[in-house]
Length: 66
Image (cartoon, rainbow, N blue to C red; front, top):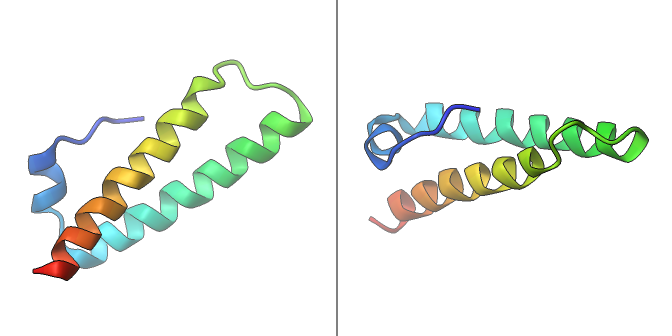
């Protein structure tokens, strides 16, 4: 999973930001499902995915307030 800096997030368009959120949410659901069936190699990737979604949603909310 690539780490985005704050500059990367602010440079994204609103549509790109929304698409990135949806993609990450889908990826997280798939990881959770596969982890429930058979443990994945790195369970901390689930935490990283949740944090990534939170960063994206925070940027989206910040834009909505302005």
